[in-house]
Image 1 (cartoon, helix red, strand yellow):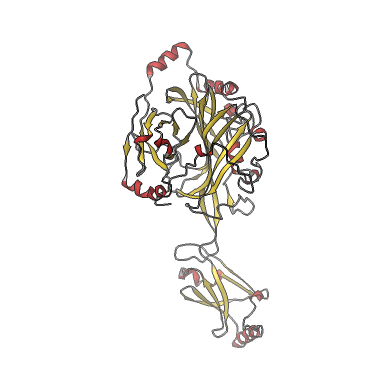
Image 2 (cartoon, rainbow, N blue to C red):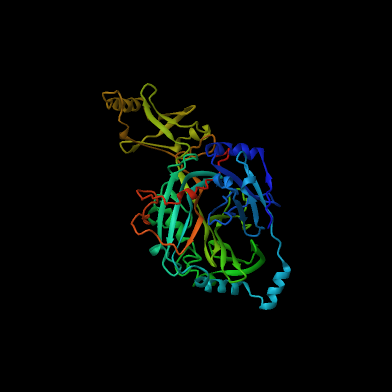
Length: 531
């Protein structure tokens, strides 16, 4: 295949990314897009030719390549499901702007499909899936191996990156015939909390289903000691094909086929390898499950598995829809892709995304309550100006003194202040009440408000926020691992400097850089103006 580079520069994009480029001039930055739709190509594989190293494009198609590969004249090989492979001379990329690289859809070669059809009966979707699952022990490594790659976890709110944590990890796996959680060891090579992106301490907190502060609606995610990478590994249904993985897939080997219906879609390609395209779904009383399997027509290796689960009873705000053309709210999505190395399938990347709801403090609340003995009234100070009609309704206020309710006669408003005038049967009763309160003055001329209980309800501010009512923000939590190196037959170092799997990844965990650490890099999402 001849080398070809197609570069387009967008002034807006260049301006948006210029700060990031200035911070890390040792990198070349690119963005992969669909030549026909002009949409970003997420999770495209970008490899250095003849080297077992590479990177995966981000959600926006962006990627970074160390400048040193340009200096030694390397070639990039770019592949993505359904597109023609692209080869590009790194020397043709510029370090001054963002390199926009187009991928062209690969047409289905009907003649090849017809020839294959003569050799064997056309298989149904469920037959293809059964053969693929049965072939896992033959197509995936049953021997020890290592993968090294870029790990990150982060949240997104309205497309903004929040709490981005990044690492380079080495994963030492004893093979698909062993229990991943029990036998696989992980080495932390490097880590950082990326302070270039927004940090939100509340969103960082663990899920709390008791308080409701941070929850996944209608789902439960085991904490595994707060170790995000352990959570991610559990959601690789291929690596855990004969044990429990995640809801509805459960054990891929035993449960998956029985739990879903399957359909054959139009075949596709990854580079020059023809793939079956199998869609599947599950419909329950509360959930929809949609997914796709991309399976080799040659040996039934599963190259890619996508699975998304939606809440049937909740719609997306604004009814914008999603990639499965439904309006339901996403609960979680798992995308796993494998690559062929030495005739065996090894992880290329895994992305796990779940939505969660975060309880945020009330936007409208009371800042202070006091007594005004000159005006003979109580004073309530709000943090925002109330909507007047609701703020002067006496039944919305509940005030008790020594356990006995005080009736209110009227309420006067002055911007953020409400003056509450008690109702007494006689002037003498009013005088006696405030005289008693005056006797409770302390040395600082203050009255102990512990003698009172006070509640306010139903009052709203001018934006419609109800008093003391928490709001809920919708976030997406991502955990992702992108393999940069595959090392067949590799075993881990014989020491104890491995990550402890049942506590947070970077909580007093050992960090040890390997000898070839200079060959690795973090493919940090490119920062836009919005971020």
